[in-house]
Image 1 (cartoon, rainbow, N blue to C red):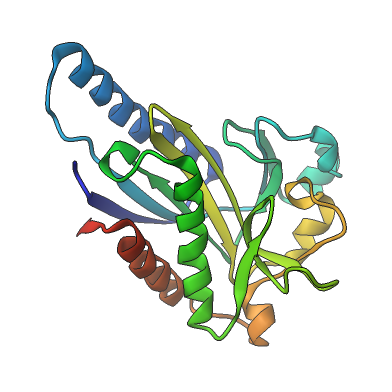
Image 2 (image 1 turned 90 degrees about the vertical axis):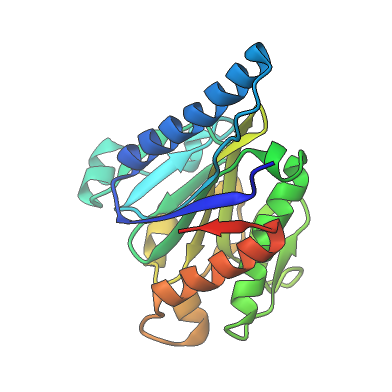
Length: 233
């Protein structure tokens, strides 16, 4: 079992470019697992964690409803946004400037083979991060992601999640609103959930902006502790 995780902060990067990069890393791990099985090999599979910030983009998961995108092609162009139907779970979400997006590309055979546990630990990393800013975040039953004021009329989502897994290898991940322009969520039914709002860390803290690098450092710290990672720079 290889619990080393290679950390890469990609900075600002196009969604499709990043998706292709994820697919390449994902295929590398899967191909090595297949080779190990066929040849009874014992090569260690690598793990990766990517941080990135995307230009304005809407993505729809494989089980999502296209009607949850409330813009046509012309309106998308006017908003400076693009749209992709992708191969993760979940419905529609938005990525854009001011958002901290994390893509763990892990061979769960190196950690544990339990997708439910994987998602809950990703949520926990975000919950612990937000606690460092004085926010009490939690899960909402049946709704993957991280929320504030669950069970109240003011419930609002601060972090969306959607993953893909094959042969216990993961890709895609989470999107935490840090300094996000929440107006872009007005053009979708976020994650297919009606009647609940979205929020961002800078809004909750009443600040013009929050240091995104500090947020990433906290997420990475909690991720490493929860997954018992042997870090690799």
